[in-house]
Length: 116
Image (cartoon, rainbow, N blue to C red; front, side, top):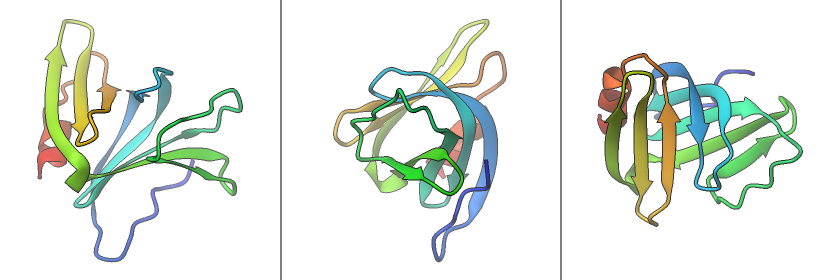
């Protein structure tokens, strides 16, 4: 997987290797880059997956699935912490929920990056 392609005026804050569950429910393992404008998630293409989300594009060159969420579309950011799972749930203005699971690792820096 290559790095996220940034738009003009966009700067990357940080990148995490993290599990992602989109509203459709299938779990992916990939890299989340949080920028000053977007959340960009890249994971390897899965031919069996047919996303219904307009947040998804397919990069044929890299064979990656790319989820791009504009920060302006984020309505709420929630955190769920248990002993073995630290999760960030991003709710968009359309009501869809996007879950990022960092396992036992802290999600505090991720939440700060999303909220900045």
